[in-house]
Length: 247
Image 1: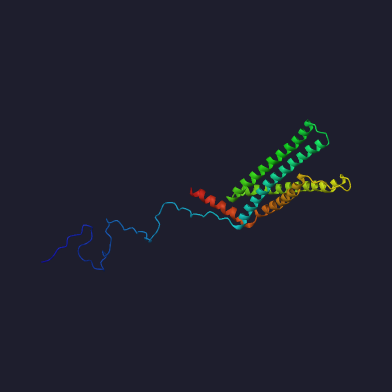
Image 2: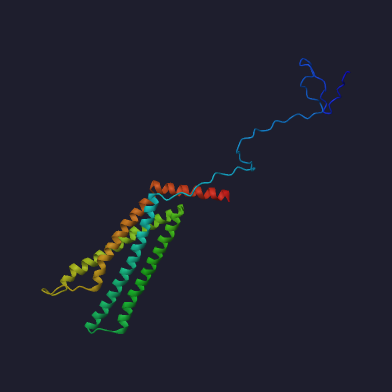
């Protein structure tokens, strides 16, 4: 009994088609063409629409910026030491002047008070300037630690002015020391010892402090612009730009 093959609902013939037939492997007209799918890669990330930049690690402190911050801390310590030593020196000098007027029976309350008040006002102004310089060193040091280039520029300017100011103070202290030691001998009768006052002991201390400040500010200025510090500032700027773009 012969068998009849019903037509396939998809339109494909239900009977075998020879390979030399023009209808072999022919796609029907009403069948949609097959679309090629992209190859699936194992463990491939899911497409998120926008490529995110690769995270950048925060730049680490190298030896050059670390030494720069240490020198900045040394400048702060020296400024505080200068404030203490200069205050002790001026107070001792005021006591000496008061005692001198008393011994010479020239004491007049109004004159002595005016004299000491004038020196105290000058000391207060200098102390305020010293405290401001300490605050500036500390604040700029924090921003240099965070890699801010503007803080490095301001720190370099402060270091230059620090060297100039310390040089003038050093010359002034050396002049006072010379006057007290050399010219003071001419005011004393021959054979008598040269008197030593309490405030004189602060002069060598201040000379050492000002000389140290000159050296410290010089090295601070140098280390602020060495290649290691330049690389740290540049990498810190790149890190901030990347973090800002990812925010």
